[in-house]
Image 1 (spheres, one colour):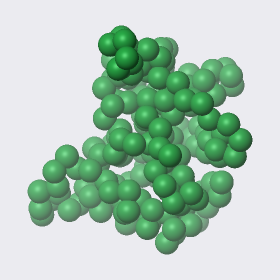
Image 2: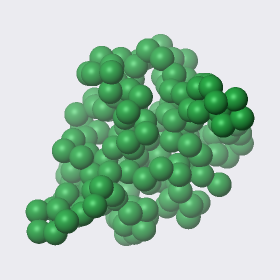
Image 3: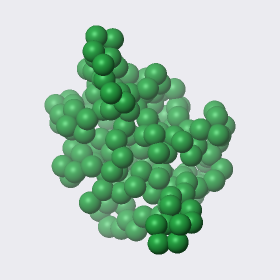
Image 4: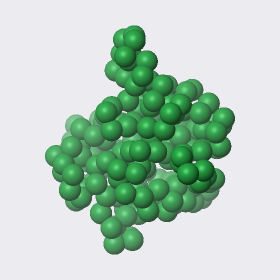
Length: 174
């Protein structure tokens, strides 16, 4: 089962608040991407239903970006919303996540939230990463929407075991 990306974004915003931190747009987008990637690798299914796109500073989930871009480089101070189709009103995007899936998200967040947003962006730009492949393919061919296929994300995380650092450190093995 995949979730709305705005629901998972709010889970991470809640986790940050509990720690007394505020996330920036770049940090939230990258943590969301890594959570999605690790979820694909561990559970063989997408964490979020909306696709990631290859943008200049790394993978971006457009539905999340559209709601947080107004915060610029500053901290995100409000929760994301989604349309309630039964009422036609916008409501806070909430997901009921429990058990091993919640522990999984907590582990991913605990690991990646420790990095500066620019470092998170650097990690997505490593040579051979899904972002790198799509970004560089666009120099030679049209890549509609610059979508990063889940299959490509899964293959990279399975092949590398999440190797995300030039220094040889390993990623979170959650």
